[in-house]
Each structure stands twice: as structure tokens, then as C-alpha cells.
Length: 239
Image (cartoon, rainbow, N blue to C red; front, side):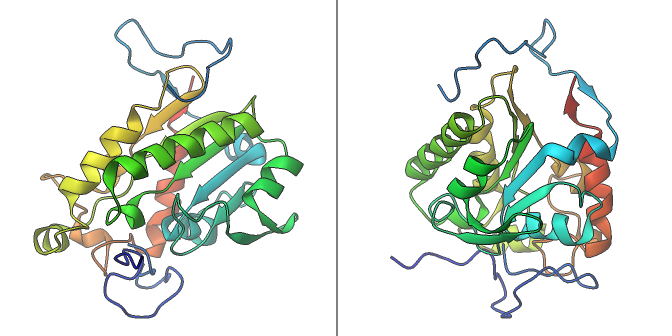
């Protein structure tokens, strides 16, 4: 089945995020073990700020937005398993070149490395699929990562919003659908070793859309903002 292409919203044919334009081509899990509960009495997670060394044993899994983090962010000590167009349906079949590791599948990577943190950002490209099936596939991925990396803290990352102009004119890739999916995957967090983080607070305008000043293609942030994004990630680590 051919699905809508969120990674290439304008069909420009570009394959990677652009430093000048920011344009890319994207548009009960875990048993928790005996991990401590990092939430307060109101169920709110307590965040702390870390330096970049925290990411020495981190893995980021994702689509073109995660490719952007790897290329323009400042977390080069982390590993990145990311490609333009990555989805929860294809993540097991993709072969990705991971620096210092080699060209590997996700199974090979998780089976040969030990990670203390795994960040997952997927879902925007799957908005044209059956919703419940995609949420189920996402949960299965979280379970799989937990099985392969039993001691890792997993961070489920919200999918970025698109601009108001894109959202208002797209029946599939709009912020209502993005919010619906983000809300569903946030339920996989358990407050102990699986956490949900939402960077949209950094890039949204007052109406909850991707701020037009941060993007040139209505879907990706400009290259210069990935460092800001990385700083935000460093400030949102479960205490």
C-alpha cells in the first residue's frame, strides 16, 4: 500500500535537513522492573539538567527530524539510528550507518551495544495509516527496545507540530492528528523508566502550531535551531 509522504511535504526531492532552510524530506509497555518512580505526588515528572556526557551511552531512533539532530545538534557522542522517512512499520527492516558501529539493522545495533538511554521520535510519517494499528506498532517498538536494552531509560518524544498554514490545508498531516497521536503514545510512559517529553513547547506559537519563524518548509525547524533543541533535551532528563 502506498501511504502519504510526510517526509516530503512539498515533494521537493530533498533527502536531508538543510542547514540554511531546515527543509528535510519528512514531514501496558515495559514492566518497569524495580526502577524508581521519578514522578512527584501529583504524577508530574521532576526534570533535571545534564551535560553532554550524559549522552555517551544514548541512542536516538527517528526520522528526518532525528537526522537533523545528528547533523546540526551538539550531541555527537550519542548514537543515531535515523533515516529520512523512518516509520514504526519499517524501523526493523532499515539498515543504517552508525558511526563507530557500522551499517546495521536495529536488531544488530541493540544486540551489540549497551545503552543507558534510548530516545524514540517516530509517528509523523505514519499519520496516513490506521491510527490504532500505528499506536500498537509504536507500543511494540517500545517493548522491543525494553527487551533488548533492559536497563535503559526510554524517552518517548512527541512529534513536532507543523505550521498553521500547513495544518489548515492538510487533511492528514495536521496538528489535530499529530496531537491525537502524541497523546496516545504518551500513555506508554510509566514515570519510572519510560518518560514522555514534548519539545513543541519550545517551537510552538501561542496557538500551538509550529512557529513560522522557526521553519522554511512548514514542517521542520531550521538547522540553526537543532542546537537549541539539544539544549532543551539536556534540560529534560528525569531526575
